[in-house]
Image 1 (spheres, rainbow, N blue to C red):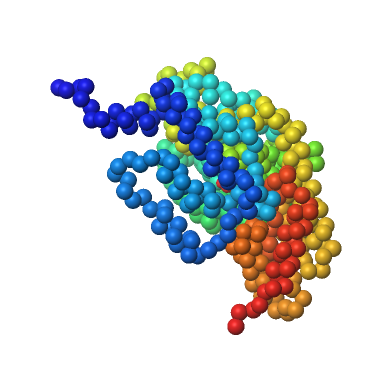
Image 2: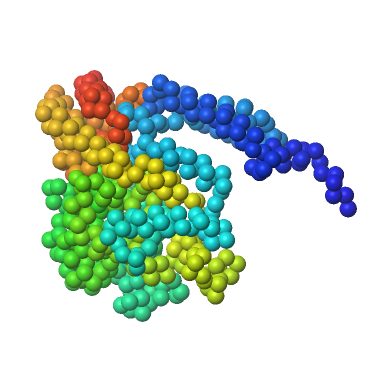
Length: 502
Ligand SMILES: *Cc1c(COP(=O)(O)O)cnc(C)c1O
């Protein structure tokens, strides 16, 4: 057997491409090169280069993986990547980006990402995670405390609010089935009884509630939308009526979802009232705080969290309102016992007989097996910035929303949909020379698309009572009212330019 005669290209690839104690210099060099592209990404740039169909078609070709059977220098690949991706990427930190729930991210969180990715810890079993286990648990403990959840609570990091909401509905369903009917869904799978289970949430709740109900085999129809009041908050009376009606129809209410910070309006469902109803009905209370959850840190919004300790589970997205890179989200359960509905003991990973309180396996709380160490960025952010600075960022974006709203109310060219509850503003441009209601929808979409394609501003759109509205989602505390009013001005100018087709 010839052991020492490895082909030369293998030698080369072992030293040039894998991260290890011999490749540190190269690692530094790669990082240095990358930094140059990052500098370009930041230097006097619009939020978006702009939309050009020719170029989009070219980029589709440029993304193709051709000639990949042999190696090629990274400089070339990076240059191509820059042209294809970085130069075209949307810059969420740019103040003309006001569309979706993407935030500018903290510097410590980026450093933490670099460390977590380089060390490549998988927060899975103790023998893979060691102290990373404690860092994740500590961040979970911190946020549990903010929600007045006691030592009996626990949580886990997830890929996002959608996955967190999935875990909540799964727990709610399996817990109800087990407690009330002795049905063990985890072991035995579906039961006809479960077809009658119903989940309540406000009509303004996030679509992931319905989507997850479908993924859980319960279907969209298992989700009953409850009317909101004029502040876009769930109407508790309507919730009670809906629950009664469902029972009369022979179905079984099992859970209610209170949204803290609806995606479009930032509105907070009255969690205390809803919590009491959930207790009376003996059903699960899930709090979806994907957007609003971090505002528990602010003085201005803390009162909305009164009663939140009644929740059985909570979703909170740090990649939306804690200024963290994607992905970064947590799922909390008030009673840690309920994680048994997701836990699995695999012989090769975490055999139950090896359970050790001092050396926990986080995998027991997660849907995922191999999982990123996302908690590190929150931990480093908290230790560096502290919660006061984060709270001040959140207060600032809410204040900007109030100011924009005020100016829109005073402007005859606009109609607003709500009083901002958090940092979104929903409004529509109303052209004076358009009489047909439907035409206003077209004008607003025209405005949104024109500004986006020109790289001037990214504004979102949504629908309210069938009408199209524009939406600002403000998550950048460095934004200014001057800049936002300038976007409003561009909207007005673009709206005035609209010419009906044909
Ligand atoms: C964004 C959002 C979600 C989904 O979260 P992802 O992190 O995008 O999966 C769920 N609920 C609400 C209220 C949201 O705003």
